[in-house]
Image (cartoon, rainbow, N blue to C red):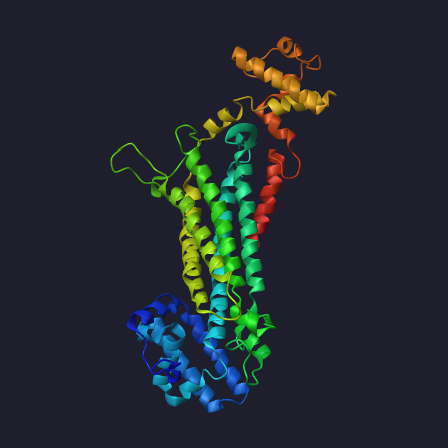
Length: 458
């Protein structure tokens, strides 16, 4: 019989029963459902709603249910709709009628809201630690490449020289913001919702502050309607997951591009590549490509839950059952992506000779030539115009900036002098950008030290 069967004279249609059931996906919440029920049992005892003996019987029974779930002998029954009902019905089978007292003053509405927040807390801790491991792998590779020049790009066109470590550290700081976003999400979800009941609050004298302490929450929800109808914590998690997916997709896009013959900046280890079923010579960066591709499902999961929630009147609606599968899928997607990144990053072979050569090509130090004129007193806009003319001349004559003689340069400005050659080298270009956050090796070492500190904080 259904928990709510007393009101009904007709049994559920089998198709409707299958359609409305959620056990297939919410069963993963069982550790948190048990933890919430144990805490609720103790709260009922404090309120005088169950005796000490009944409390102990219920807790012992819940421990037995937990043991069955842990060892795989729990008798899941899809006809009981969800994990909450499965646990409660099994408890009644084990301890008898006293099991029927567990749900006193509680609704599945505040029960699922609690389970999700407990699960969210567990997941956030795991994801943040996995992100830290990716950061650590990037920091390790950055430490090797502080003196490694490469081209920096805008619009996928070579722009100015940078060092490889500077590029890698950019992702470290992106992922730091991701870690902080997940942490912020967890902080805002650190509120007890149990005791809100169906929507109006429980009618029994439950000490919600003591209950919050038992479950490790920092605060108690101040509004029962909000408590059972809010899914902001999940949405924030999905948003943080989507942004993380975007960052990791960009990293994967860089690496797959660099691995092309046209770039030749990096080679993937055989352990993180695959071959072609028809072309024997191929070595495809499939792991990186899949990381890039999985950002799409992270985006989709966020949009799915936002769309589900957008038109719902207060308080709980069954539409909200649709929050779980996208949420769980994003958790599983991050759990799949993040562990593969540190070993993949550690195994990359950077072709530093190709990077260094490319760093000085395609007029990469043209901005440095303009800066040289500025230091000689020419306003930057005029310097920009002069150097644009120099570049046009080089293209016509098929020369490089470094290949121009002083006489040729002075045709464009009398400010050019013998020291101009020193301004046009890749190393000089790098050294000049020593501001905080710049690509000069001295500045990159400071950023590297900061990155190490952030990663060490855990």
